[in-house]
Image (cartoon, rainbow, N blue to C red):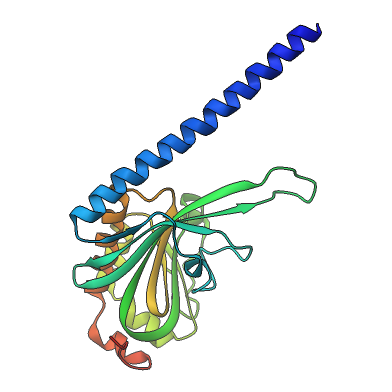
Length: 223
């Protein structure tokens, strides 16, 4: 009986070792593929990340308990500077839990023409779209999105009908304006395909926002 237990323990330990090794190999392969794609576009790549990125913009998707941002990609897309990264943080489900649950987000930040009031646009799930009553709040309530902004004039200037229509039909991203930066995020890993899709999605949003929206802030961002 003891021999069976020892063999079972050894098998479990071996399986765990192989799983960890496979996970590391898969991560290295993903990073290599991403690095190759990024460099072919003339963008920068860092596998080690930047700890300041998780503390620069308090609020979603960043967890108060911290986390790591890596790998990091930076460059210019459609005339706008951006920094994108894979953000991972852990949450312990209960005080007695021994294992923390990792949460992974793809985050894309894009420089705005100026510093503007904070505004957040998050997608409703399918149930919320059915149950929610379309009662406007300070920023306006939309069928597919919730909007939070203390400046209703700015929110209405940004969320023109052409912008809202595109958001309703566009890919499932949450995003917000924080000072002079647009922050977009969704669950999952940073891959070349998802990065390019997100950059195009946010560029399409910014292209539809009228120029007067950028005059609600404190002026242009210093270059």
